[in-house]
Image (cartoon, rainbow, N blue to C red; front, side, top):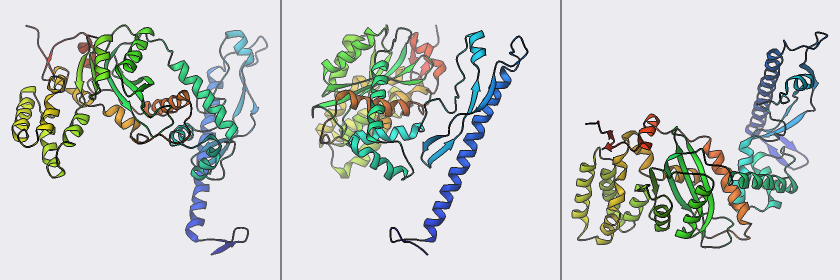
Amino acid sequence: MKKNSSHETLIGPEETSRSILEELLREGARKLLQQAIENEVEEYLRRYSHERDEQGRRLVVKNGHLPVRDIVTGLGLIPIRQPRVDDRKLRKSTGLERFTSNILPRYLRRIPSIDNLIPALYLKGISTGDFPLALEAILGDSVKGLSATNIVRLKAKWEEEYLEWNRRDLSQKAYVYFWADGIYFNVRLDDDRSCILVIMAADEEGNKELLSITDGYRESELSWREMLLDLKRRGLKRGPELAIGDGAMGFWKALHEVFPGTRMQRCWVHKTANILDKLPKSMQSKAKAHIHEMYRSESRDTALKAYDHFVQVYRSKYPHAVACLEKDKDVLFTFYDFPATHWIHIRTTNPIESTFGTVRLRTHKTKGCGSRTATLTMVFKLALEAQKTWKRLKGHNLISLVLQRKVFINGELKEAA
């Protein structure tokens, strides 16, 4: 073993091997990134190699390199020297915008996954002044340039992005499905009774997108109405064909008022949890299997038979559990009137639950509340990054038929007579 005289710590063979491996990974990543950027520039030069001036000289040339830029990554700092492209003459003659690397945009200093740490840590209660130490603990002491001042600037930039996104025009958009939920975080909110209201949507092509994020007062009807009316104000002409949500009555009342043509689907995950909560633990496993039989059936008739069976089995001994199921019967089986390939998407609010699962905690707020805009911004940044991984709806080719309000019976399109 080697002894470090300055810190009086022992460095064993495992630590030494890990350090060597990390250095090799960093160097490999640097070479790959550097080569990719060089290739991108060469491709740009070849694309405009035929563009020449009156003297036959090229209008696009390489002119050395830009100063070394340290990119913050999970492996630590990776230094990159980006080739400098001189395309001023081309831009003057053609009006093209100046060359900007798609791999390494002009002002990129840290990879997006690093940026995601800041919203997550903020929502967990880390103060601005503590960010440098927190990030150093996660990324290592090689991370530089993440001072408290830089964190403040970054948060201000994100707030501008959120406010701009929240004003974007929706007049050219149409959505087939909404997923709505009120998320209670262990975060900096002005009031213990406040929560984050979220709407996700599926568009005409079957792509899921984050549609709206705001704060509300205990998922009240007023808060949801304000949110839905804001979508209309920004140009959304037509409501979705189906909305999926939990039992918060505020959302459903507001939806009926703002988009009266939208049908309702009660989330089976929330409903299952609510029913099981009214049963002893010894009964929950069996009851859960009965509930699964309802919404996983191939037809509405089979599902309703499973429903009737549950009611008969549990009513006498567990009337509260049965009452919980019965009160939403009319909106639990709506999904059978939509394409069967969409059922996996529209029976629950899982798209929202899975997105916010890592930071969602139904506990008390953290000490020292931040501004509502800052909190909304952090939730927005995390959700927007998660959106990149959202998958397109299965059976997206059937969405046009749903928007035309064609009739589906047990998930199958009803043939014209």
